[in-house]
Length: 407
Image (tube, rainbow, N blue to C red; front, side, top):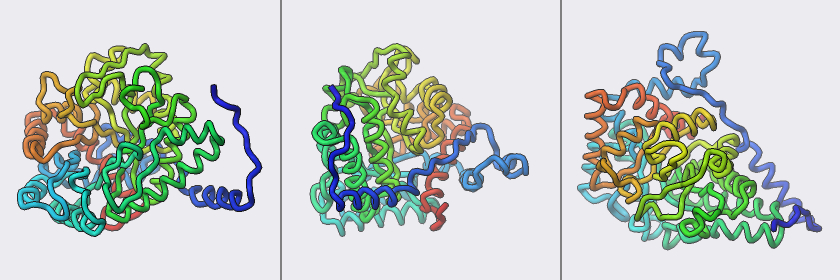
């Protein structure tokens, strides 16, 4: 049973600490305006009527996307893993030059080195992609805390999400949220100093009987409201140091680990509304990127969420009002296995509403070629690919990644 919220006697130093944190984070609480760019062209956005309604940064993003050739346009929706540690091997340099992705993700095998070597690898990767495409990539990592820690040295480990729930029970919600914010800022500063600007975290799913065996300590606990507030505190801390969080895994996980088998979320629409409450809360509080799971949700569609326009367009975009970047989870997972190859599934995912998809070096070329081919033969409408690329470029502009612009 959840204990009543209360405030203990607080020392003067703690009050000062709380005040400083609150003032420090106030600018990060401003919410972006929701704007739907579907079917809006660059010319339409430039006329006087539209100019009064449309964010000028979106106009700039649309202009940049429209200026890209098919090769660069298709590459902008890819987030690719890379080979190498300390520096890029020759084959990786060739891959990134031929298919300069919109983002790069790094794992333990890239990061098992001193911080200077990590910085060198990121700098080399970022420079190569930017020189080729004119657009710097997102540099991403999974830095959730607890068991999900890609760094082996040089970066402090974050506590597991579940530890903050324990702090809530032992102390208070206020103390738990304050610690999440402080830990998130510290972790964000550390990974930002290495060159990362995107974090595949936090998990925004509250713990329940469906996901308990899979998520375990990765969840902020069994209560929707605390999970929502805790994830929001983590996002605010990271955002304050200009690291973009990707909240995950929408709409939720079921009992099976999706890396190894199909995960089915057997819930009616009422229960689904309860399950996604933390996501809805985060969206209302300015979340800018969401990872969609390979979960099958029979009450919504007969396609897994990452391939479902019902889930991504109707539910996530229209009902919940999310206008940021939708990223689909890795299509080499067993939960995504079916009638499609990973590269075909990636194209179908973007056609269904995703804005970025994950790819590995071994299938980067095939995935990129699949996008270009689908664009040429009409299987992937150009308007949909432009919309996806615009959203990606918009966030890069807002973060000041492109040409040093900051908005």
